[in-house]
Image (cartoon, rainbow, N blue to C red):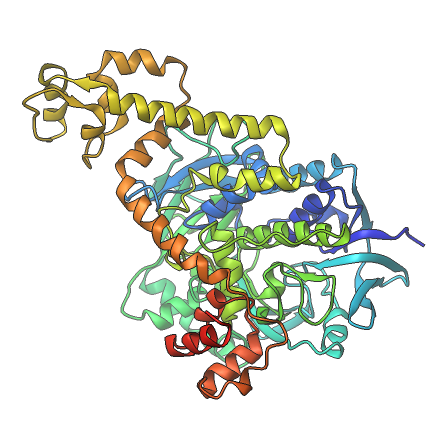
Length: 620
């Protein structure tokens, strides 16, 4: 019989690793239960972290004291900052990663956390007393008692793998599905559903001809994810780009009658923004080609991930079609792509803490909530782990608002709107993109991480030092001037209007085509000043000054709307007694049970007039 734990985490994927690490960092005794100790933090799909919006999430995880960014840096084989041609609200960091090193680094990080214990077994059921979780039961007949339980089951809950006209149980290629938890949750009154995702074939890199593909190198001046002292990748491996063609599409179409996507074998919804190759050529029949990204899986392996070619067609058709792609004429396949269906639980059944409404002390994180993506899973795991740990230690939950973080946007979207297809984060989902940039995540969230014990004093000193140094630099730029003789040559090179008299440096930095480097070229005083200033401080000062007006306006809007978050709605409120509410509002409010007026206002079907009725009823 294992000891009683404060927190038991079920599953050791990206959500599970973050949850276990976070709960344990807060001082909660934590057990991480996984079916296979050798697949902790497995990158089930592409060997990459970050990207548009996802990179912002990863920086936020790091700023709160999570582990994913540190692990991503330690296993990076390439770094790229995406969307640099756009404004800083859109800049999104991304790494290509060594799949094996990523999993190894996560396991080492967890093993260094003395409050984390491990157990290899399948969790087959939940132990409850009334409406409270008290533990889990496992496949080998062990009951493990716990004050809080976090379920991060990924694609394993009753997982079914589809490959052509073949179906078999599994949570991932070569790994069995998890059974029992779904039945227990349904018995407890939860609503469940099915979702689908897919993965492309993996191939032998030695059999590819890279000379006919487009090179996709990393950045010349690579950065990193973590705000800690992780190393920047000094060496990088390139990726490559190639394209499908009409012959490829013709071969793929010949197998549509055996495709589970089209013959009715798969009925659940897949990720709209990451469609399979058969969906692409069906939905976009007018296109003669689609991009295929050729991504190495690590430093010391020849295995290649064929990004953009996700499929569940029969394996022989996959191979024939790939051999028509430039560079793939002699390709050897390691394993075919496949689709997988799995159980999820609509997330409107959760509170903002990610604790379930029906069972006290039970938390869900990751794909069980209907999301897709490592970063989306990781941030949910982090917040569920923090709140499960705090629950076990009799502390109040930590809730991030939509104006605090992309993490807050994601969780609020799930809890308030639910999802009927795999949810993926985009920058367009956030109302406050200028506030929620990847570069200022530490300034936004590290104070919270420090206050709850996720970040130590030394790291918080560095954050405060960065904030102060940025303030001082901005003050210097407001005072320091440059003459026409000093500035006009540089301005001419930037096709920017010359100045006729001395102006302050801040008057030039707000010009869209003038950068901090241009100011350095103009002003010897500024060059002397920044000799001890960190690169991140220069970037912060430039962004804050250049976008000062936009940032200020967005902050004002966020502050005004946040007042609605302060108007709490009683948990036992009976909405159908308010006669002035629309029938749709009564139905939606009764189902979702928003915690405050702000959340209620974001529910589809609840109109501004319905919000006014609630405000009047609540005395506002």
